Length: 468
Image 1 (cartoon, rainbow, N blue to C red):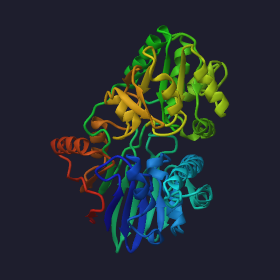
Image 2 (cartoon, rainbow, N blue to C red):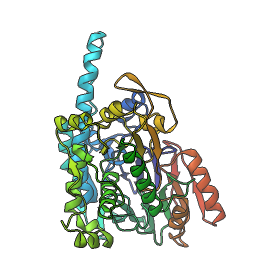
Image 3 (cartoon, rainbow, N blue to C red):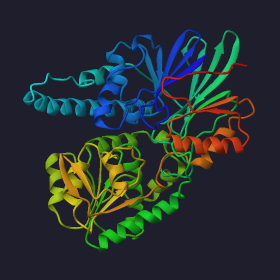
């Protein structure tokens, strides 16, 4: 039994981990690599393994760095099932379609430039038809309901508390009469965050494959993040400015809407228009409304008390679908809160809002998510005085603010607690989905905590997993 990570290995993107068991190959996640655009096309187009040899996929959640290459996997010959929760299957379906639309549009634009240079056209990594075909392969499962993946391997999905439908994947394996339990954490959420239940901890696990995104950091308390958000909103609104928030369509957008809704109800901030300007985020929010089986008690209590009975809608909030509605937002000079995709500010309508507002000192650009190196959002956080948007340079005069407390990833302290919960059977911890500094800091803390062997394999490195 062995593991090879073909993505999210010594980095935080492109999650793809291959488990080989009893002659079967199980792929944990199949995400897009995100980073420099010139690097991403080839890495996402070509698999370092033959998709036809993969027997099944187990999908932890719908974020594109975990799910977005599934249509390409199917396009290149994968014929098995994609096992995940119902909420993740629902979210992934619209996110894969959205990604296909972006890929087709980007290639169309690129090919116009290539034609002018006398270069041959390129093809999109996959098309809308490929995305739709991938949807036929999904099999939905409830939390805590074991199912057979392949002969000798039973899986159970447990709540990861990261985004709607996110799951840790527990695999009970009978390998030639020897029983072993392997758990893939997916992305681990946090306790006491709004909307979702707390993460389920490992139990009686032999091998733990776990993320370490924030292995070198302790998060602010969610209440501190709430206070920081309130402070930024009040300061910018009182100066007559706009707050521009690049936000992931899944999870972060809904959390921000929920918190801002509470602030208005408590009269903690002035009443100004709030715009969610992302068709994908609007569709995702509709799915959030449908999957109440993922909610925690706090949001049920809130909806009972709230006069309109909804967590994601209020009188100051507008969901803008059309391009015309999006353009109208930037025509106004009045204070407003604008939440728009993408979270890394690499594509989507957020680029138009940044272009139109980045040169105004009274405005604030608020970053509330982890952002990958070489992305526009990372360059803003790094303090670049000018940035390139749509091929043109813009001076950065708006205030750039980061609030880390909204992260949906576990911090160092909770990662240690998570690993320790695996119990006395734990023999090996494999760290994935983390940059080098984060992984090394976490490995040091794990050693101090008396945890067993911890490794941090590179991309394509084969790791033998222990059997009893």
